[in-house]
Length: 113
Length: 112
Image (cartoon, rainbow over all chains, first blue to last red; front, side):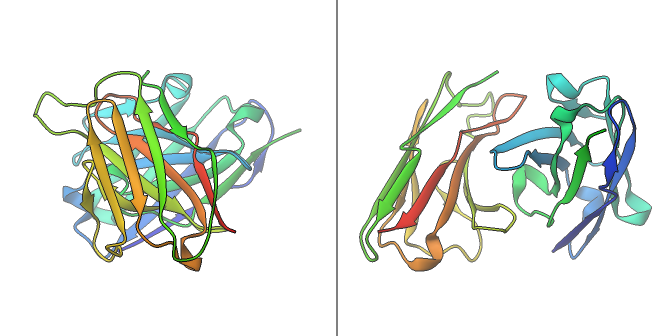
């Protein structure tokens, strides 16, 4: 199983960013997928969850309306579109498998002016 | 949201000795399907989290049998029977019964 995130960069407050996660080594199309984040030196926070065909999406309250989770099963890829970013969104963003069974190495998003 | 409270937040253990981490939830984690979705994760320094245990007591593939999970309802425990040097890191409990899923604050385990 391999999950490889990309797309994390330095962005200004109010900006937008799209994270990607390339999955391999398991049946991606039959798996719920997730994004989890970790602010520098802090604990873990579940961000969003998506079902197998992308029709059921769940978000943590503070991110609902700003973040959009999506997937492309043909490309074995998971995405997180992040809008209206604030400094509080600065974190390492992990792509994770069903109920956290597997994790990527994370991609760092820094929101600062 | 369900609040997960871990204790202690820091643990210093002698090599070969046991360690125990408690995790309590603000409401029952018994799901409507009858399962209790409480997981434990290990995060070694500089690494991504790794799931050790799911559904209270089921060890994930490749997890040494010195790790065990127990508990029910709102009270759960992760035990390491004999701590090894590679067990240093932060341990988190996660409730994945009620959305939004929530983690405990983390317990830092170090070698004495």
